[in-house]
Image 1 (cartoon, one colour):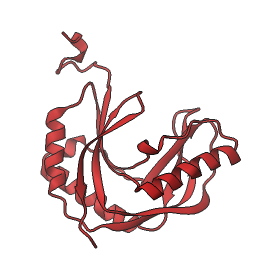
Image 2: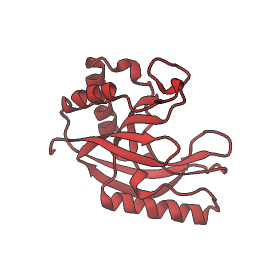
Image 3: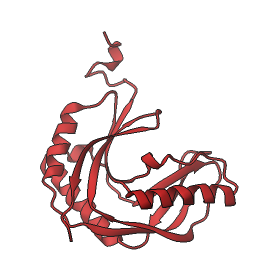
Length: 194
């Protein structure tokens, strides 16, 4: 029998699971981003561990942190995602810098150059589908497109980098096991060919 704090309805349960919609880089862009993160770590004298290639992503819409995987929410989110119709688009990141965060744990992120308008339009269309499905209460406002490469104690001023880009052809729903550095894809939805 699970401990009482893990049962539904007990608000003090510690979150163990996160659910969010994301875009994943294709193989070539993922490899390029991984190489770039290691290169930046070495050339800038950073000490943080680079994210594994399999965890690189662009968060579109976080649905929240939960004490266990909320199956009902996941099913509703899947249904809403299936209703999204959007053309594929080109996306490229051409700047890198630190975001603010917890002291000693600052995210070093890639920032969008080309494709920002299309990415914003796509994210809004997904948000509209989720709101229509009654999931608006789970969404946070504010969308700052980025791809996290690593976390470090040192802040890095924004600077240009060689573009890391790909054609976005699908989006995914991810289940993140908090504190375990593990992502599980719960669903994939293709975009229309442009």
